[in-house]
Image 1: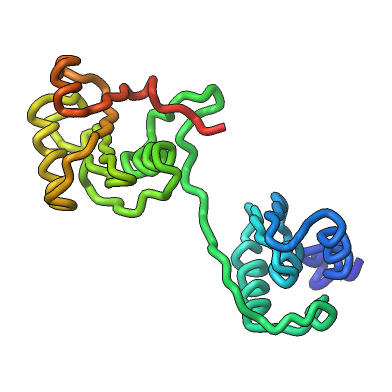
Image 2 (image 1 turned 30 degrees about the horizontal axis):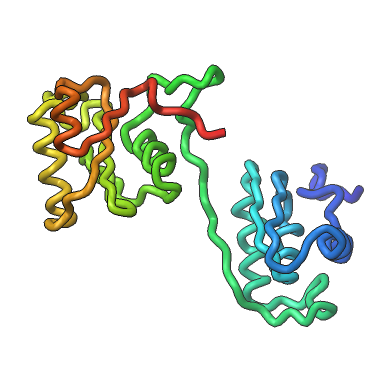
Length: 220
């Protein structure tokens, strides 16, 4: 293996695009989802893109930024290396690049004690709706989705009002909902350490209360 300045090159065994093309041609159809959990230099994603497959690539190394992203950008721009000519690739399409946040749960499936409100809020909202939480505001109200509102009382988001559902904390949540949609009158799911509202009140207010940490589960 050729060395540069006494160190090995970034990728000792880069896979040729032609090999990946043959594998994907045998194992997948256009529109299928291809997963490469060790993306490396991005060859699998590049070939999948050119072949009309959807793809997910996972890479922990810095070359996710230094190699994979630039390579896919070149693919989108229509670069003519690898299998481009054989598949008639002219460019197009796009991809999304995400960075994983800190883990919510420890090895035993318990919520980590140092987790921030925003991280837990993102987990709760995605678990409930299947969609990413984008508001990222300093409010217990997380958002509306499919006619339901979601809120989280955690980590002192309301200061001295605490993480307990009371008439006072509910009033704050309701005010935030009105700011978002003055006509909203649907059901509300609230996560918190404890509820001091009676079951009858929760039922009358159309509230589903879920207790942290017990009702927050790791997605499997």
